[in-house]
Amino acid sequence: MEQELRKEARKLLEEVNVDYIVGFARGSLKFSTTPLITKDKEEVASLVISPFMVNNLARFLIEMPGRVGIVAKGCDSRSVVSLIQDNQVIRDKVVIIGVPCSGLIDIAKVEKLANKDRDEFDDITLQGEETVVIIGGQKTKFPTKDVLFAHCLGCESPTPKEYDILLGKPRDAIGDEALSRREIKQLEDMVPEQRWGFWKEQLSHCIRCYACRQICPACFCERCFVEESQPRWISSVSQWQDNLMFQVIRNIHVAGRCTDCGECERACPMNIPLRSLSKKMSELVDETFRYTAGIDKNEPALMTAYEHVEAEDLIM
Amino acid sequence: MERKVEWEPRIVGFLCKWCSYAGADLAGTGRKKYPANVRILKVPCSGRVDPLLILKGLRLGFDGVMVSGCHPGDCHYQTGNYRVRRRLALTKKFLEYIGIPEERIKASWVSASEGAKFAQVVAAVVKDIEEVGPNKLFTEDGQ
Image (cartoon, rainbow over all chains, first blue to last red; front, top):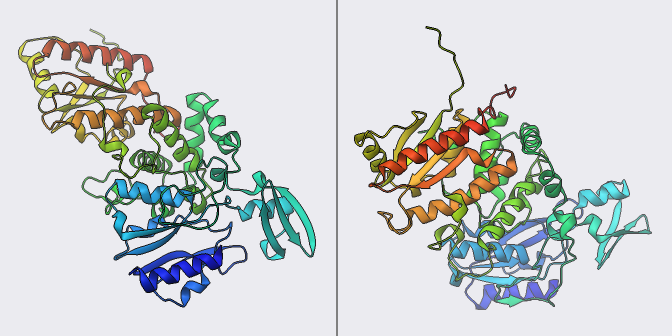
């Protein structure tokens, strides 16, 4: 599939008048990838497809000029569609190279299971329900469910629905919805005071680096409310009250755009379970308005649409 | 005469300029009595009410937040109240998940001719917020 991708990418640059290719290249660490943005026909040879291509590349489209060919997994493709709905991206200016996703391996989980550093692994291959890790010539098998990112277990469309070129065969998700929302379920079972205590504690660790915002393809405001100074909505000092307010507002602002790509949680240097916020918001959007983000590019975005009669129980 | 100091709810109310604010005015000129617990802020349209305003109200220690606009179909800008309705529906449910009782946020439609209704709405809001109790969410020790 990699060869096919490189061929297609080259063809796009040479023949189809695409200015840039956005994809993944091998990262500097073992079992990692890094985003690759290139207009060089030779450089496309370093494009890779692997279960470690964690980034949501749709993020780059917001800032990129010209016509862009983008490598997209299921969640990336949904984010692109969502950006099209919000008029942030013009459909004709992107060529979506769809890649059916196997699910993404969280290397930290493998390290923990094997109790070894990533440098000690020779190879990791995802084979359906099992993931084979080779350490010093020895094969060890782990259940795939235990090594995938939690958001991948809740994925409904690992194969992009919106694409121009689809590489390989469509895949089904290795789904486990219950496991994917385990933390949310635990929170739902608490009383409100306990939930408040939980988030107060978690967000007291936040250092307000804004990595979650910067990596999020749904956060595309040119000026974020946290940086406004007249009025200053929240203090720029990191204290739990304002950290909590930041996360709550951020999640409400991206409601109907979040595709549960899990990037906020992965990018967080303080390991705050941010996906327990964003995934819950997606669920609320679905149960309240029967809306799923990034499905249909011709459908109006959630917050721009309305019905004459809805959410009646809200009004006194 | 000794006066017992009891907790009184402090509520911030965002009223749309075209309907609810005029409705509140009418309640005044019609000499309708209602509790004085709501601090009213005029907004150009209920569609102006970002969840940020609601959270900021709670962060500043208000016990409740009230949003009121034109009835569906009556918005001066056609769709502002429909939009805020979607936003509020999600905001309330999401805040409940975070641990903020959703009863602290109240939404109503009051037209410019409904002075009496405005008085009733405020009385009902105050009663509900009294039941929820004082907002100590953002104070450091929860006291």
